[in-house]
Each structure stands twice: as C-alpha cells, then as structure tokens.
Length: 75
Image (tube, rainbow, N blue to C red; front, side, top):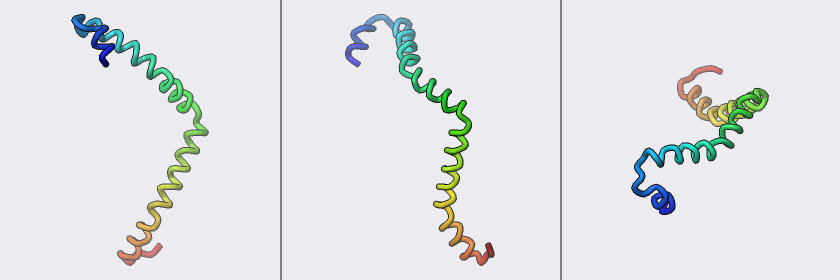
C-alpha cells in the first residue's frame, strides 16, 4: 500500500484508475479463463450438480423423515 501511495501521490484518481484497471484485468484473467473453461464443460457441470443434489438429499432426508412422522404423513 505504501508503494502505491508513493507512486501515485499527488496525481489524483485519473492517474490511478487506469493502473488499477490494468492490475485488475491481469489478476482476474486466470479466474476468467478457468470460468470459461468450466462453463464450456457441460459434463463437469452436470457431474457437479448431480453430486450436489445427492449431498443435499442425504442431508435433508433425516429432517424430511421426521417431518413426515410428526405430521403423520405417509411416504
């Protein structure tokens, strides 16, 4: 932070803004590339969704079962 303050001291936001933009683009580029690769891999998305649904179902099942029993509902 001290180095940034020293570099842009007295210059105003107009000088800082482009440098910040360039830094953000360079830092976020790997994340954007990975996101694009994952977004285009529909098999991986389907697998992740299926696994998530299975985990959610396993976590919810005991609560759902107790609810059915408490309300006297048949399954």
